[in-house]
Length: 120
Image (tube, rainbow, N blue to C red; front, side, top):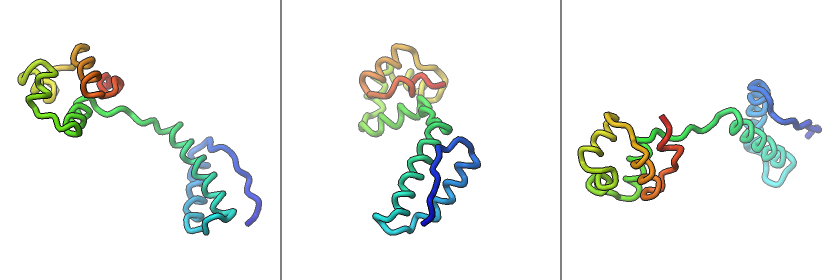
């Protein structure tokens, strides 16, 4: 294997080049110089992706539905947290925005990150 100069990825063109290199190295033998290069290039690519492709918080309503499902909450239990069945329906159908009180309750009781609940 020839000497490879490794530089931080700073452009989409360089990123594409690194991804092609990674693709070529995927079947290399473990514990080889190629495997080491694959690991380093993968770290650089991951770092570039994290810097250029921010992960947006989920939609607040999707976050509520997901977390309620994960916790096995019934509609009745969720309604009790948000102020009643009608209020729950309005919120989940996007007819009523979340109030600060609702956001605080959902954050404290369901452990939904505040940035998810505040995303609009």
